[in-house]
Length: 367
Image (tube, rainbow, N blue to C red; front, side, top):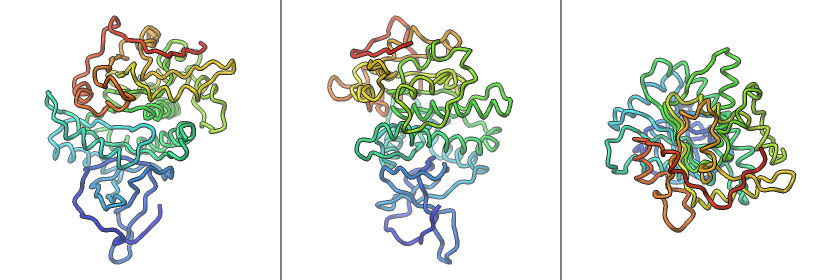
């Protein structure tokens, strides 16, 4: 973590957000005596420089940068409880953004969601989880195979540090992952499993509920084929940007669905839109050796996944068609922050299987 002076930027000192989690590279600020302080500075823009994961509170807008106070893991519970008390909310909903999102965008989205007026009493305080990535030259593959897994690793280290401090906390925590943020979740889940295995712990849920929205993960993530008992000991390796695409979507995702389910105390909710055009972008990046496109995403092709869910967790994974939340035009990918979506997070009611909708341009791939 770099150090810099305290008076380099203009802007007011009124916090615009109570706290957030990020793995952005931080600059530690010095006080008037030149001594280190808990104040840090970080960029508003999209950055691919990560430096471990941190909890920050009292986030202040300083023009081109943000400033905030670092929170020690042992103080995290008190900070979360104060933020909930000040906001009048009861539970935390962590928001893990997707591809092509700057820190500014993630913070603004969470702020907008917290200010939305909805038809039910709000229980959630939305808190952004901002992960470092690049949007250089449309580098979707680099973000997916390098920066998303790196973010998952950073957040796992932070969670391990927080777990002891939060184990006696009564704060309820759920997570909403949008688009490629679900890939971060999947890698986090499989790495978390390895931590539990090493500690000889059977299962320890991290979240109350998990909302996978417009999920940029393979459509059959929760299928019996990918979550068989014989592959239960397989662990995702460190993803290599040079690894073949078909290996990334086959061998490296064994038991990804099972491990996500194990993160949830209650349920996993898959919110999908069959008119999502943005998720068509991923399909050309995932081509098997036969040349067949097999990269259909869960976020638009969940209608095909409903009948494939593994019997072990069929009762824990629910699906909801969200075509009504989007528009009849446009890419229909960013409805995760709208009023109807927030109302669903507050009071989820999964569809009956008879209500499933299937998308066009589906590529199921090999099983």
